[in-house]
Amino acid sequence: MFTGIIKAVGTVTTHEKKKEGLYLGIDTRQLDITSIELGDSIAVSGVCLTVVQKNTQALFFDLSPETLACTILGNLTLGSLVNLEPALTLKASLGGHLVSGHCDGIGAIRSITSLGENSSIRIEAPQELMRYIAEKGSICVDGVSLTINCVYENNFEINIIPYTLQATAFNQFKIGQQVNLEVDLIARYIESLFHRT
Image (cartoon, rainbow, N blue to C red):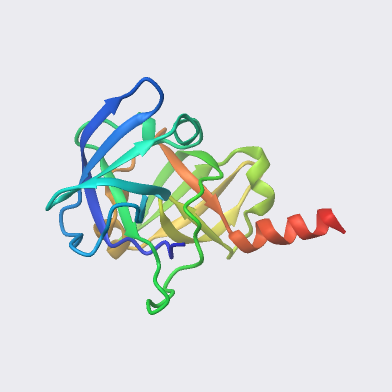
């Protein structure tokens, strides 16, 4: 489980295609990884991955074909920036919202508009996810917990404050870029309960 509060921005240093899947290495930069063990979970741009190898400043992951099919991680290249968050512990504060790290779909950035020091970003989402996206609700974009400002037929808008731009890989966003999306966990479970009754 995660909170959508990014702890560091990492850089892809290893991107090796395997017969099935991908071996991914990330220089974790300012993230303290001394307490991270093999087998621990880390959210990489919103995708829960298992640490399979580490050194003093990098973490390594094996990505399955399923992960590559459902996320943007296969599109990363050497030097790509990724948002990083270690798994939530029971003693940590829940600053964002509950995030599972299980990507629901891939969105695409349709516009970026400056609003003074802030930025408004419009993201097109798969149609099957739009029913979970509500105005003033929560969504996770590339691992970042955000509040939805406006909802349209097939896209939504989020507002990014200067701190978020500086503390995440969002400052690299470009129009047309794909992003990982995870809808609010509670909305998904409520729908599941209604379908079972």
